[in-house]
Length: 148
Image (cartoon, rainbow, N blue to C red):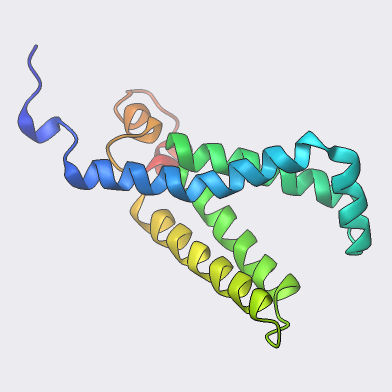
């Protein structure tokens, strides 16, 4: 059966897909980097006054939510989690505005959070696992709502 032009992804869908990939890249890279040297990561977190479980949760969040956004699976939830993570990171770790570098990191975190909030509101778009799953019949109502 031939696909109609209206059911094929358009330019906006491709741009949304590219945006999701670009937004997720920083979290996937950082998460894998932190996981790659877990001993050093736990030491760095300890110097910041944070425990090993917080370090592990941070890695899990960055990789898990990063994959969620990249693949378009439970995108709204992954984007919301990363938006809140970015806000927390900005407010907890990058408030020394006398340092130009800290100010830049603060602004970067706010910008990424903004992009993630937009994604949480808009959803993954046509090129996503969310869209494929929404087409399935017999899906549990909570999952259908999460994919909408």
